Image (cartoon, rainbow, N blue to C red; front, side, top):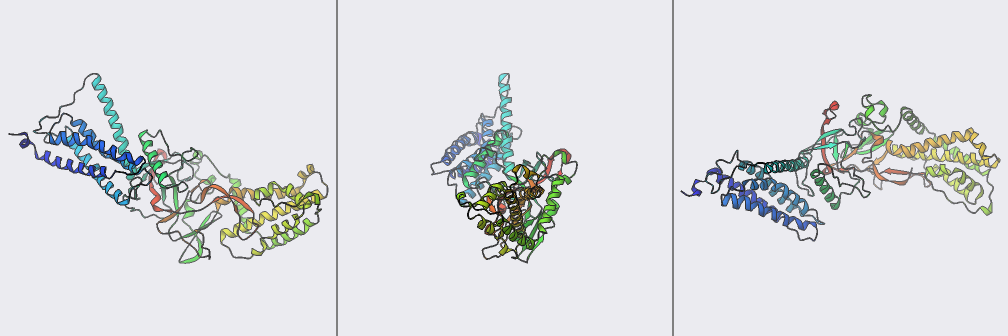
Length: 578
């Protein structure tokens, strides 16, 4: 009786599945062909070499020659086949042009077949399960027996194999199912603290194969208040950046989280991904003033407070749970400063614009009493309208106004340029900033007039520090600078999305969301850009005071949401569902 007749039905069944697996691997390998002169050229030859070696050991040796001498090499080659092909999948898409969507679809489907069958087929070839499969083989698999140095080397190789198997398994697990995430900053205090470790569910958030739009559908329905992990939109999300991000993640895993190449142009580790909370939904237009978030929709033109946001927004860290305080590294404001901020905002809300108009005209009149034009002093140069610059250079500006031609005219225009827009109707944010602009101008004007009086009266500069009026005005100027430069962009946000050119409201589009951190004073989120830009406090004043702002709100499409934190597993003292 020939060996072929002695082969079992289990052998033929497994051979069929092996042929299906390698047919899928062959399709995948052909889809790796690239005609571009870049790194993507490596994908096809590398996958072809590995595929060829695997075919030789698995199909030629095992299932054609029925030679079990190298069955363990065949098993290992088969186990690592999907992972090696996964790496070539990334390589093929790491070039300048990528691949068409239809190619990605077939590549993903064929890889999935290989992934499933490689696992199932390899398991059946191990000694514990291959008794019927190897029945009747020409060369039966030999039991591995090692002694001495051979045994030591085998143990080392086995550990290395287990290590890489674990790395690749975790990599696939983290891409598609669940990711471990360590909180890197205090932007979500008190919900999360630095070094908190959480499980992030990804499977219901539409995970995608790296560098493609192919993946699982997004089953999750997001709502206001959900904490999510998202790609950082402040970094470029173009093809080149995505290739670098995926490559760095792969190296990070292979190096046991010791080598992280995901850095920005300055060589600093990227703050990517981010963990934030959903605060704006599709169909909404938002504005935030004095720490309160407001919304309106097509159903109503009126901005109404978002009650749910107040449950999560944390402005005063001094009031958080006392058990958390020792673990919070930064308190942006102490209790006294927080109360001073509230008092300042109350002062701004109650600021009398009618009285300010009278003061503006009066300041122009008073300054003229101290004007002594010196033709040799030249013409007045318009100063920077940055509020910080105006207050820092008061003495120089005042002397120029008193002595140089054109100074009085500039002061008259500057101190009164807001008056024509005094009675216009504005939204909450615009009205508040309009008032800040007026408060800054009036304070500046009062300081200029007081300096002019001191200079005109010949009072020595060393005596100025004893002037109570000057000290009070400088105290007001310091408070204005403190709020405008330090708190304005954190406590407030302009109408977003901004109205169109005709003043009609625009809304967050479908499938898009707006996010902020809970720790609003210490969160660079979707409210801000990373660079400062000189910005006018109000567009209703042609000579508005300016400040350096990072305000640039944006929404993101849900495709950039990576997952949702579901469980904090460290520290154990705060273990629990998120």
